[in-house]
Length: 296
Image 1 (cartoon, rainbow, N blue to C red):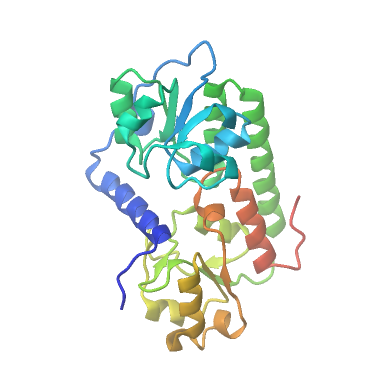
Image 2: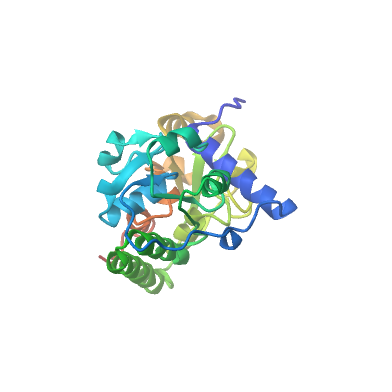
């Protein structure tokens, strides 16, 4: 069995381990308790983003032109590719400082070390963290407020909240709840657990998450157990995983394989807490219950 992890699975594992460590030892300062600089009187003109979802939020708010630095993982929107790179999940503090930002925004927990270091150096920072779909809109509003575009933030958040509300109403009583496996990696199998956006989105779309009891985040799920649960849909995030499920003898008898329902999806639509989660939700709804009209 190969132990190589794909980039998506590595990110999922890092997130799971980081959150688990915080829960066990309580050693990380709670994001909401970290002191922050007061909102400046003038909106920031030079913004550095330490996380891909933050970058997507900034561009959705219409302030992408003020962004001067992003991570190497930022791939949306296409305009983000032209921005200076400040590292991957581990931010290069010297590079950030060289860009002379008047605001640095990152994930409140995963980027906590960088945010704390920059704040010590008198750089204004903002940490955001959405733990479920309902709180994604709050992250948007928080970023918008610091960037001086509160009205646009309220508009985006209201649209998201309204959409997910319609999904809850429209799919709450659908007949049949197909079993869905969301695999960040196929071999070994890394599946979406119970405390993930994916799990919430699957349930909202009228499905059941095969990996719901694998762990609270993304976690290793026994192939034998997953096969025994006979998922009707398998969602994968890369071509190697797609080939594995389609060609492996262990999976040959599973309904998803027999019915050609092993589907390659864009993981960013399911893993990044930003406006594009709406696109991922629509995709899931159409896959699981094509008989139901997806709200606009």
